[in-house]
Length: 101
Image 1 (cartoon, rainbow, N blue to C red):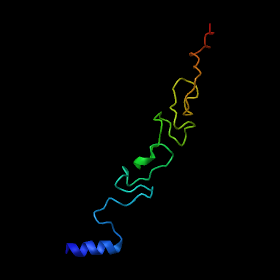
Image 2 (image 1 turned 180 degrees about the horizontal axis):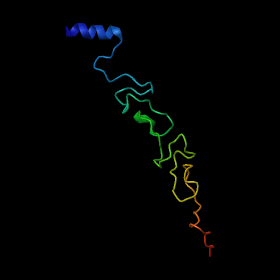
Image 3 (image 1 turned 180 degrees about the vertical axis):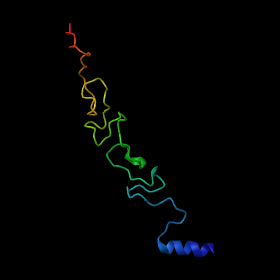
């Protein structure tokens, strides 16, 4: 009975033992794909793991909305929603920045 199943699976194109196919179509075989049911987003960031990364820099701004998806936003009150770090300091509440000596 086992021999019949193995032969049938070979002729049907099914992998014997499983785990080798690319079930999500991202180009990574199941033995290296950490997320075999979800395709990798192939954006140049950790693409070898087979899992999509919705926020590459982990700054809380999803890559689809992030102007700088690989550089984390620094929350400082200046354009904090754009996903890019700013070098300018935010003015204090209700006032301007003090002059630089």
